Amino acid sequence: MPLPTTDQEWPPPVMKPEMLLYAQHGAWYAGDPDQLAKVYGAGVVPGIGLDLKGWDRPLVRGGGWLNRITRMFWGTPVPAGQTRSTKIHVPIAADIASTSADLLFSEPPSLRLSGTPSQKRLDKILADGGVIPVLLEGGELAAAHGGVFLRAGWDTELSDMPIIDTVPADAAVPEFSKGRLKAVTFWRIVHEDEHEVWRHLERHEFGRVFHGLYRGDADRLGMQVPLQDLPETESFSELVDAEGGFDSHYRGLLVHYVPNMRPHRTLRGTALGRSDYAGVEILMDSLDETFTSWMRDLRLGKGRIIVPEVYLQNTGRGRGAMFDPDREVYAPLGMLPPPGGSGSSMITVSQFDIRVAEHQATAKSLLAQILRGAGYSVQSFGEAGEGAAATATEIHSRERRSFTTRRRKIGYWTPALSWLSECLLAIDNAVYGTKVVAERAQVEWPDGVTPDPEALSRTLDMLNRAQSASLDTRIRMLHPEWEDTQVKAEVDRLRDEHGLNAPDPAELREMILPEADDLSASETAS
Image (cartoon, rainbow, N blue to C red; front, side, top):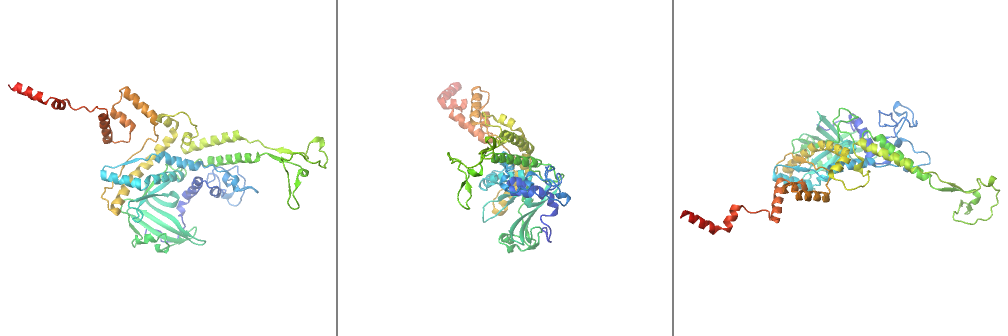
């Protein structure tokens, strides 16, 4: 029985280091101040726990060497009289994740197969099955958590083709062998109340998928119960056999793990990927602290006036008093004149300076450091300003760091997409009865930059006038994604339109002078 048969701690204790990192990076990705405060509120020692900043933080809690000092900005307690809303969060982590996904899949790659029927069916699955949006989702999750699981499956009641979805890394217990995924157990909470937590476990092995339902508590898995006990898992009871599993209709795993980037700098030796946020958490925390200070200056810098008590107008017994700043004439006040003609009896204006330039420079510098540490150029986030139209070469030069990171990530996504084509077609053949050949596709990635149509047209026009490039070459420049048959057909159409497809001279002679040829032949014979 591959699923757990006894009560145990869940997630398993062996996953504690990974789960701590997932919680930390997940809080940054979510951008929830309460999650950030919870993650960094434990006061752990820098370099050992999650607090990477810390030695300048005050001692707020004693007891235990892990709880003795220092917290990051999001872990410091809110001062008395203030609310959590006074702390400002800048969602740069979410921007990094979405930009990473856009660099990979805003222009989707092409999956090429050798067989035409298989190619047509795969194209239909990719288009109608919404695979590209799923890949965009996976790109974001991988950037945030350090990796993502692609899972293939089917549901004949919902769809007439295979289904692909993503599973975040913090909802999986993977097993690797020589850096490759050999099995994985997904888990999700399907029901919980004050005392019980019901978890659904889904385990994938080569050629088999297992399902189990467990009733435990917040920290422990509990004992296995029948799948029919909850409506969320009842449908799986009709699929599994006596061992709690069923055949996957594929020779390998129905799951593929895509690491964001390797190696993992914190968990050295693991096959898991590292997050884009690894190493820049302290900078993102400092960026939030900078914006919080900036907003505090705005609040404190609001113009206020301080008036003596005699200037206030009584609004009635128990209703307090008020001051009308628009009133122009006041009745003589019976009070002693202030010493020297000024003092507490006069109206005092209070307004502090707002340090805009200092905060802006600090935030800009921190942002540049965060993006560089995450592997991106600031131009990819629109921080370089808008200028004249740039060529594809200039864009690559400006965003070199971002495209270098993109190429590294492509190296991890290419095998996953190749596996995806074979897995989807194998399920399509076995479950839906389509007569297609399951094969691994050749993945072709676009260059990531869409050329300016006006600049490209000027280039093609100059090449045509200079007669320095053939029609075939110019068509390939305009449509680099086209295959040879498409290019040849376009060349023929253009030559027909321009009257360049002249017939063969021998055929032309036969059409124009058939009688002359016959006469010449007879004269020669005589």
